[in-house]
Image 1 (cartoon, rainbow over the protein chains, first blue to last red):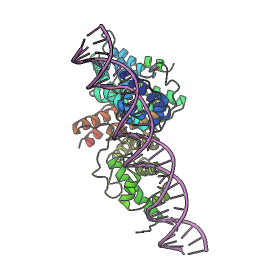
Image 2 (cartoon, chains in turn green, yellow, blue, cyan):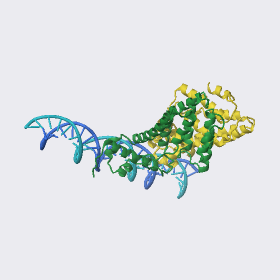
Image 3 (tube, chains in turn brown, red, yellow, blue):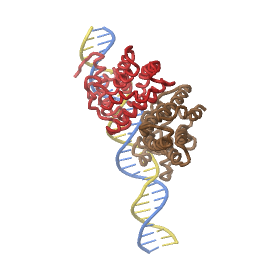
Image 4 (cartoon, chains in turn orange, blue, purple, cyan):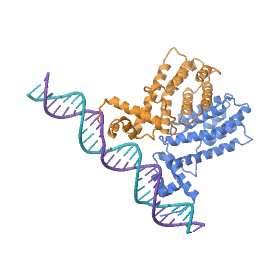
Length: 209
Length: 209
DNA sequence: CCGATAAAGACCGACTGTCGGTCTATTTGT
DNA sequence: ACAAATAGACCGACAGTCGGTCTTTATCGG
């Protein structure tokens, strides 16, 4: 049974299917054949679009990060927002994984042994988000609400911490442990950025909803 | 050619060889056959000692972490040291990877795609070191040199940041970028732990040598 | 303007090489 | 003689390759 499609359509079909499988079963445990079977295409077709399994993973991660980066950029470039508002908005925009494409992934299992995927996401997120957040912090320094000699590095540390601690797959926290860490993280941010004690109270309240 | 050895000796031989290969070529790219060839043993011998490739990785990581934990514990239990001294000593004991067993690994290549190994090391390091460091922080709170409502969580964040940022394999920094991050990290610690501004100056100086 | 022809490229699935892991036979120490 | 240690032939699963087919679209002579 031979069904011909547009290049981009087929490519996205592979990407979407692979993403669902990678997230639910894990990258390593997902077979190329799993992907082929799920779509109903042959080996050759897959390799007509991607030259390796890893290239698919990279493409998926790039796609995910890209949407997050776009949101962050949009917020960061708003001239009417204060640095504090931007910071909160950007972080909140990240947290809920959103419905991604349509609705899939909502019920995704916490897949522990998925090291490649987690690591690549982490690195890409830090690389692409830190410059944006650094600018926001610098705006905050000019507004005299933040104070640090190392805005860039501080952002990196905070991003890494958040990505690792709050990503399922590294540690499996109980709900109350998660809450505790979220609260602690807000305090860490406040201190790391040299903000006035208690100035992140608002964010704290939002997080604890 | 058949050579019989003591159980522990053979086991360590496998561990040492595997560790060298995992670090230089990466875990995934290292074949069981690579290990066998390097030692000069057969498949059956390998599987007589370990039931999977991953079990070898876990054993290696446990061994590495164990030496770090032992050092940390030894320092932490010294009744004559202040919390600040302990904190510095423990961190410094981690930094130089030491000659591990004898001398190997000194010239280890920075292997970027080694996600499994990096992730497992990270998680194990945090799990085993954070309780020890948390106690040190609590001692510091009693000594009134630190102040935080979240000692445990703060330690976790700091450990994660340090492990990821300073581990080759996640990011590849230039020497001066590394220095910059080390400096920034000391400031982050100072602030995160609620220490008096400038009280970590000593540590800073030591790091910059 | 139309039908033949050729180029592009989407698609197929048998096949290959590699790798982690199993199994059974043999040797060695006690 | 018995258990522990060693050996290596063997297996199934998997990522990736290759030679080729089918469909669509552009081109061109009449």
